[in-house]
Structure formats: structure tokens, C-alpha cells
Length: 116
Length: 116
Image (spheres, each protein chain N blue to C red):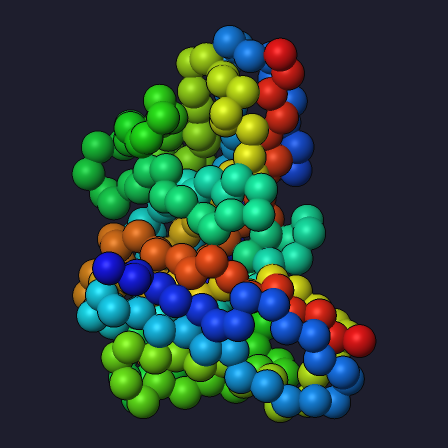
């Protein structure tokens, strides 16, 4: 039972490079989301999805793109990395469908990204 | 729009004394509320959740929280702190998003220090 799997665990990019952070879950969860965690700011929601083919912006979406072609996968794309995107990124999922807001989030172990 | 305010960025207690971590929220709907804990260099673990049933919610490791709608608060308490409780704690609200589902917003976190 893998739960939520994030890859890679660590990544160093140069300014302007692009990359994709991968997130996969095997729990058949409808809801998936991406957060970034910065010291003193908690976790801030980047993008989220309530099901395959549906995505929406969170609190800090600029500089990030997402898509949700399958229930299992929810990749996060950085098109042109900036030093301000240095952070720890967490993917999370829950069973929440559109009418179920009570399911807790299950988190991956995080990706530590450094942009130089 | 929903928001979560954790009133203390740091709380320091002595082992064996009570713990109080404060959280206020705003929501345009009837929200679900959660507390998560994050130990150093680890992912996030659910402590407890409020989902419009009993207003006093019991969680793992002796923690509990009381939902007070009139005060829009969801404070986390524990009668007697243990050294192992030292961690960062996040108050979380789940509320209506734009795509008909629910999105989850985190507070900035409260770091709990426990002195021997």
C-alpha cells in the first residue's frame, strides 16, 4: 500500500529551467492537491483537483501548471524556475468528491527543490 | 473566502503542563476543520477533525479540540505535554472551492517546544 508517492525527493535547478514534480496515489482518491511549505508561512495551496479533467487554482498558483488526465496522477510543472520557487513541495490526496468535505488529506513525503 | 489564523507562531511549555494552541478561522460555508502535526523532516499526520458532529473532538496522542462557532475558533489542547509532542502543528479548514468541490487551506503553523 504505497499511499501518495512523490518524485524526486530532492532537485536542484538553475533559474529558467523547467521540470515536473510527479505525484501518484493508489487509493482511488478524487481530490489531489499541491502545497509549498516555506518557513513561517505554513503550507500554501498551489493548485488542486477534484477529479480527472478538473483543476483549479489555490492561493499561490503563479509560475506553476497542473493537469489531471487520470485519477492516480497529478503532476506539477514549473515552466521557468525562479529562486522564489525554492521550497518544499507536498502532494496530498483525499477521498473527497464534490460532496464530501470531511475526508482528511494523505500526504506524500515531499520534494525539496532548490533554484539557484 | 476562507482563511485560517494560528494566533501563536511559537508556544513553549514544560513537560507535564497543559498545552493550548489557538486557531481562528473564517469561512463562507460550514467548514470542516482539522489539526495536523509535522515532526522535523517528516510529512504531516492527522491529529483530529471536526465535521459538524460533536463540538468537542478527541484525537490521537491525548489531544482534543473544541469547535466554537460563535467565536470561529478551533483551539487544540492537551492536559499534559510530553517531550515527544515537540513538533509543528497546523490548523486546517476545508471549504467550498470554485469547481464545486472543496479545497483545503492551512494556517501558518505553531511550533511547540517542550522543556524537560
